Image (cartoon, rainbow, N blue to C red; front, side, top):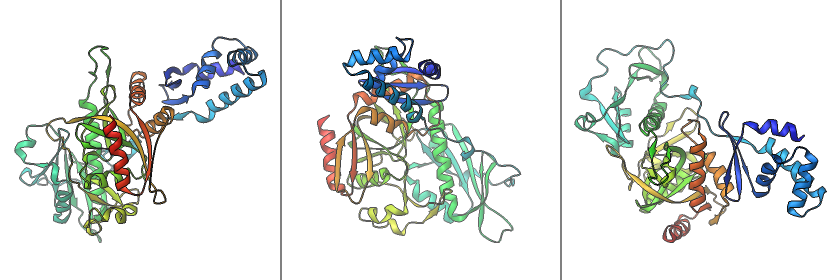
Length: 418
């Protein structure tokens, strides 16, 4: 049994972490987070040759019976098989930028630069050419903060040109979308265009950021180098200098929380794409408009009275949404803007809970954060170590809430204590 186990785990690296450790297989991006006892068993397994020797070693070290030691070891071996999880990877097949087969061709005068909308996000410039005036007006409403003149846009490299053109000879109003003159979607219904354009912007920003953020030295003393890393998280704060990171999976309520805090005057750094520099605990601003799903409209209408009147859009995942630009957005248009992260809070909107904010252990925090990856680029050992270091140094909490005033008050205490 012990020999088979050693062979199975030979591809894993052990990284010490918060009174325990993390097992990491860089090849297949598998992770297992160990508590103190499990970490000790892992290390002890390489000091002995047989399972019985391991039982005796653990029994003596912890002053327990051989029977109890055996149960703990067997439990650990079973946990290794059942509790190991894979880091989040994006599916390339879902790319918004991938050309389709047998596409319709755009007309020669479709890319008239005098009619272009120039969007700049995080020093990334995208030009939009839209023939339908209603869609164009809606895109302007949503991304008004990011629209710049062609003169400003010309100072930056154009990442993509995007054309939205109505299809001809169709019974219903449908549209074809082109990125750099390559068709990426055809026969898209009217209410599906904006979500697809939002997806193009989102994917362009994180790919462009990943390309630009080459390894940099964060700590002159240690000389360590690492990439920026991206997570599915909101980031807000009472001031741009002190930000709280709110990682969460889709549907947890992070967008609702970010929108309500922005309405109450908090600085809004991002709702969806948190670009993190883990070595220095900093985040790059990326305040794209908030995607409000149907379930959050009633909750947010108190803060945004016109929300229910906004145009409703149909996403490719069949969810209906409204796009909400918020005030107090900290823009990073043609220059980089960063802020310090002073805490990590995992939010969950629960109408049955008024407000409950509790510290969480570091093992739980690490697992939750790793499950919120969004860039899809595989992590290496050094990058995982940087994330673990950030988790160890920052206070981590779980927030369940329905009353935003009480939630804000509790969050302000966290900020004031740092």
